[in-house]
Image (cartoon, rainbow, N blue to C red):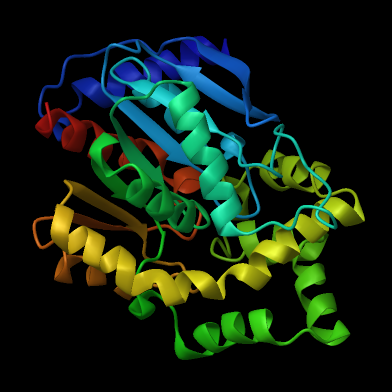
Length: 315
């Protein structure tokens, strides 16, 4: 029943006037797979024909590949979809953070190994939240494989963060006091995940957000060590702000085809961050969507339409 409903959605999506007569297709089967990357088990979802253009989806905090469960069937009939869980997230391995600290460099290195292991020779990369700092590191490590960039509430510019939020990330890195640690630790609990993440941007329309989202996230944050993994990444986040100039230089030099689909109701990664991309990739396509930080949860069909048109332009 679920597959039939998803297929009907795809059919209606593709024959709508908004789609500019793109050929209707049925969704492909999604497979749930694992691969060894440098001794780590990495879980990923895969759908679609590998001979078709690949879209590599990188998830954000505090989630996993589960966050793209709506977009996968909407796109898999037309493209090859690959959606991994980061090391330490979802169903992927979770090395002890006391022995193997988590940083964005670590996540990106594992993701580079993942791409090589799957032999993804070329791909368009979709980045949201934590997916952006992983994605930019990955693109700079293997620029010849990147055919395009889709950024959805994924920052690469200070304009995307208010001054208080910039200051917070700096304190999170530099303040090693127990008080700051406890503050970050609370972000990884029930209220921090459910209320300050998923439900924050949908006040008055909370019923649009599936409780499966935070329930699954919290399942993978059930232990102190699991929560410490995410705390360490929050502590490392300021390194991304320091890296923004390098990422911007990469964009200016490479000029990748770029699609910006941004939830404009996001108070954390504000829409000025989407507009800032246009300074370096002026030909980027920008769409500010009436949604929040988790726009792929609120408006998956609208995002899928933009991706379909964008990807078809690259053929």
